[in-house]
Image 1 (cartoon, rainbow over the protein chains, first blue to last red):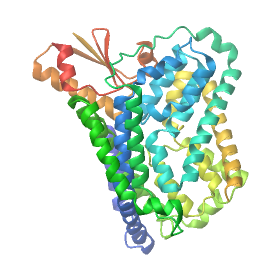
Image 2: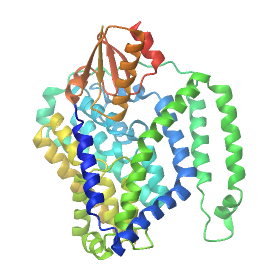
Image 3: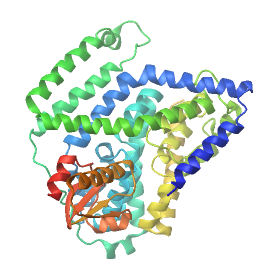
Image 4: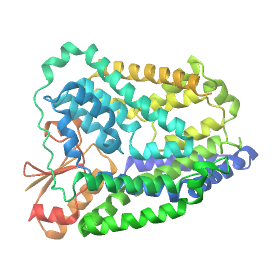
Length: 390
Length: 76
């Protein structure tokens, strides 16, 4: 049988190659710009940021008992516990929609109900560990931090509002959930796990330590000795791995690290190339899209700019992490900080394809209310952030 | 033997399917493979993390791709 999706992709690529006017200087320049941006990522972000982040994500997927988290989403769990866990658990649970959507449906249908389910659905994609690390690294720590803080706060607010809007209907439907995931025995105590994750995160932090503007003080001192710190921490990590982990665990850790890399790297390369082609590097202004367009649409920090960014973010589909090069391009072309945050908050949580899945679970009315809330909240967050950071 | 693979159609689910089909072939086991892609049905089975594999109504793995060694153990 002909694989229709692949056929359509082939036809699309063929048509693009057939019709793109490669002679036009603007196109030529944009193509070159795409590869410049890709090289910038390869040089600045892959070795010391993305690769350690993959190892951390792999370790989370492997060594943190996800079953333990599910207990807090049961119908019997205390409400405030469900909301708090739902709003932060994305950090350890989610990297792809494989995890988010079934969990969301499960929490909604058989567990804690619509409030915690929508809280999870909203915050999960925005605060996964890879997204946080790369946002902070590429777009700056302010935006990275704002992304986490707003995602968590708004997840709770959206969850509570959804719960309140639909309080009557929700009562009938929450029967007890069986959240016993086949759990595996732990070979380390929590303290050892904590130390192990701490060492890996410190390696990531020091390896990506950038040179500060001032040539003295604490930040500079750390910068001077950062490689000694990294090597020292690597040795500690090696000792931990040797004494606390058995061979099977290490093999499966490598396995899931590879899975993340295999899944995400091709998407990210494509995303960076497309972002580079359309928008160019931040300082070069050589992409296909003129900066006046971007500035007119989402420049500054007006209500319209924030709302536009939220709506675009809500409908557009971003593959895992590709929102980051796209944001980088848009910011370079004059997008305001507020609209940038609005897009980051509305973007990964929603897209046209996953709206359809959500509708299958929640029904049309609740889905529309959820989408509306996300757009309004993202707009408000953008307004607040844009006025704080100038 | 009935093997059900649960997942909304993400890359990890496809990988799980491939692994199971390979293992069944190489082991020469007679098994019926079923795909469950509908989110609501997945949840009705009590599964919250995908990919998941159910062998003869027993959930064997949730939330990750099983290893070939795991699969062999289930079908023997």
